[in-house]
Image 1 (cartoon, rainbow, N blue to C red):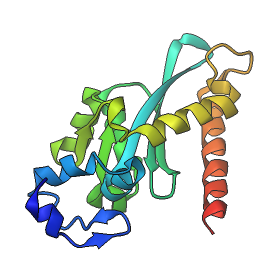
Image 2: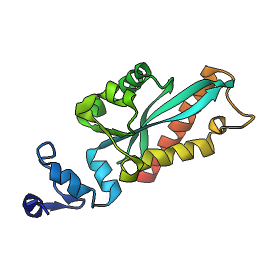
Image 3: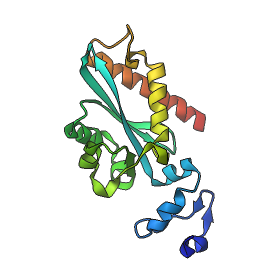
Length: 181
């Protein structure tokens, strides 16, 4: 174990993370800590899920950003799975997160292109660093019938599709906020 980590003052969530940029061993040490604390300290979880409008050939990818500290969705975008849509998605993330947070997602190249090497970390599912957003995707599919892969309630227009997703996310965030009070 790194001697510097042993001498680092403790907080409720483990070592105080004062020098993340210059200490690669600190990141390795955090992999042995409880998963949710790592994510809350480091940044926003990103993911996308597949949906469609009118017919399956008209794919509509839902890009999502989750703040693991509050478990709320801070931004979403519906579009293609291209780098251009990744950039549009990034622009919808509140500035305070864009400038100060790191971002965890899968290895999809569009994320690296839109968020840059400095702020984006591609991780595998086994790391647990995107577990919150993956769980939210399941919740979204279960509760928003338009996103179920084979259903009679699919969206027939882009406006209704985006509106339905936005309605669910706003309601979800309000419920999460009331649980924190």
